[in-house]
Amino acid sequence: MKKFDDLMSVKNEIENITAKDAKNKLNDPNVQFIDVRDKESFSKGTIGNAIHLDKAFLEFYLAEGSPLENEFFKNNPDKEYIVFCGVGGQGTLATKTMKDMGLKNVKNISGGMAEWEKIKK
Image (cartoon, rainbow, N blue to C red; front, side, top):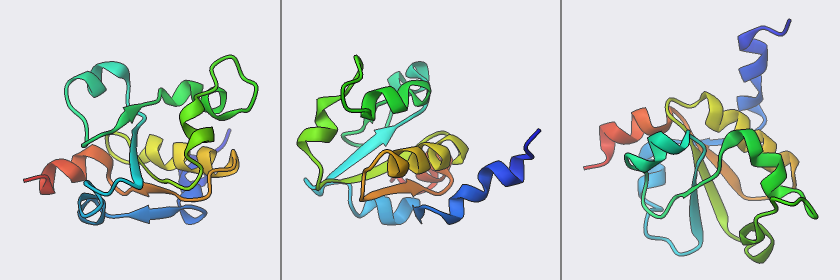
């Protein structure tokens, strides 16, 4: 069985940004925030213009020809995507998946919503 530290080592293969850096991009029209937390957490509050993408279906949203393919990504290939979750783990894995699926400009908020909550004011 793979160890947690080995699983999370993908953080070295993606670009991570701080919540403060993400906040500076909040009103940038070329940036799209992606919330990969569960739907209930998303409904209680998210970051800016974030769209909800359930991490469990991420590959299906991104794969060309998938019945769940999300046209947003195909129609906006040059956007910067900033991914986040609750504390950073799922966001890290989702960012790696999105990168592997072909998105070029995708970043993860280190510490996720927990870090965002500390600086959001």
